[in-house]
Picture 1 (cartoon, one colour):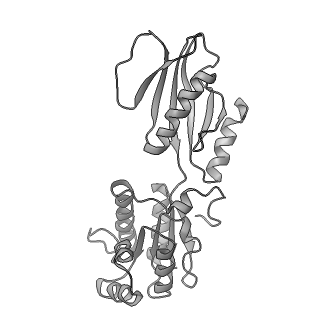
Picture 2 (cartoon, helix red, strand yellow):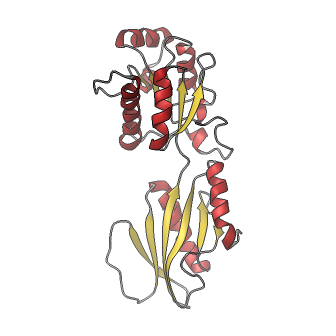
Picture 3 (cartoon, rainbow, N blue to C red):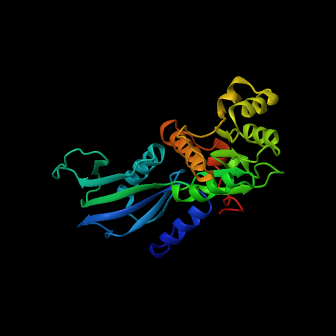
Length: 262
């Protein structure tokens, strides 16, 4: 069990190791309870709890709610009230459960899911590749840069791969990303050249659906920065509206993050 003073350090360690978890923080405690506002714990996907947010009765409710929070990716305010206590009105983002312990007491615990930053692999040493890397970080992406010659270094760990190498090793880079199961594989190219590159790969229908070329939303972009903006907008749309995530093998990994981040 992690001591109260070590919960923040444990959270930082899990973030560095790219392990998803729920941060549980007591925001209200009404006696008789064994916790105080500010007490915190970490709940992992296996149901383990490190830290302290209440006794066994509260812990069971926190564990069940935290696992749902990991699944929904939405924060939740969990109210644990003694049986017969005044009922809170139902509201979005909040849930009330009964404390089965005879000791009673009331708690409010904020459950916040923490997920690793999605990895964006950018292949190429070009102005557009540079602009993508610069603009992606404020959007919450962990950017991995790869040169023209070796393709994505860790394509299996990426949520999206963008190839912007202007004809250098494009086919090998696209093939590596597709073989790794990446759901968003973008190629910076004209419509004609992009189609030729894709045709040369002999892709299946399923693989072709994962390749975006010309990658980027149609916003009339001209400069490298504008093109990068259009590409990132398409990736964000895929994440927010289409449910784009990293391949399962990557999301379940517990090892350290990519060796080279910008």
